[in-house]
Length: 105
Image (cartoon, rainbow, N blue to C red; front, side):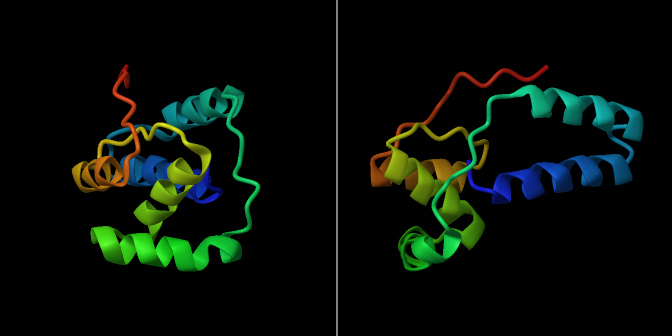
């Protein structure tokens, strides 16, 4: 997982809290659950992938953030889990399989 993922998850939780969708107390529980997941951070330094990420962003019309996930999936030959239609479409065009077993609770 890109290091960026932790910031994105934290931001999503904070936005949900600020909008009154999820109370702060629930966010603490979610953070505890996320901390128990076996998430392996990407060992590659972002600077080493900079040109690749920019190229993917340009080629597929993605944000640099989304292109970072595409780059990681390509490098590691991993499936990509996303609800973002544009990212999913770009991934499929690049030959990345989409993980479709997402279950929301």
